[in-house]
Image (cartoon, rainbow, N blue to C red):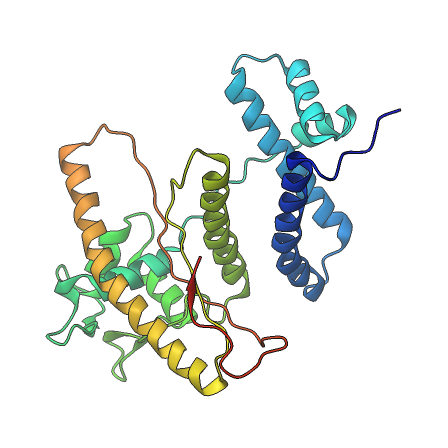
Length: 293
């Protein structure tokens, strides 16, 4: 009979901390699926698939030429999921690629960041619907040649990123359009993509030999509702400054890589700014100053 783990060991403390982190990460996800009526069985199936995929990746990294039955055994041992279930899920596995940022978002971001498409105040200029140069058609074709500009315009109108002039021959960008406005499916895709990337970076930092990915936060307690209104305005202003600086710089780097290093391996990067606030329990006036974590 195995002996219970010694609660005083560093290993036990580490395991407790790990499971505490897992619980903290799972609770917001649980709130989402409960609010949307997703049954536990569906979530359990998704978790099994994710664990099997992670174990499969690790096994193939350690032994790329592993035979299929050996691979199933390694996955079963690593996850605790029985071999029959592993086989079932591996056989029905569908490789789900991380969702690409929607084309409408890319067009909108390009419109807001490219100086050619902005006026002297730095605001996105109204554009003729059609034309070879400095039109919505040219803007859309700079992002993709696989989707017709008319289809992209329809999508941007539907999502609230753009609107037509009264005459219908010009397209105007909607300021500060929310990326998931009016589109529940796309809001879920963006949630999975953005938070998935953020969590992937944080996990890589924990599993690696140091912080590979930038991940910093500021925590402040004792704020009133009026102060939070001011904080939100500060956050929006800071994001606009970061956006205006980074997007043109990234586009220059992409262009230079395309011209100077066409055969080099490519990487993608996600850069974001997030905030969260909630009622503070047992708060007293003037509690805590801001802190960095």
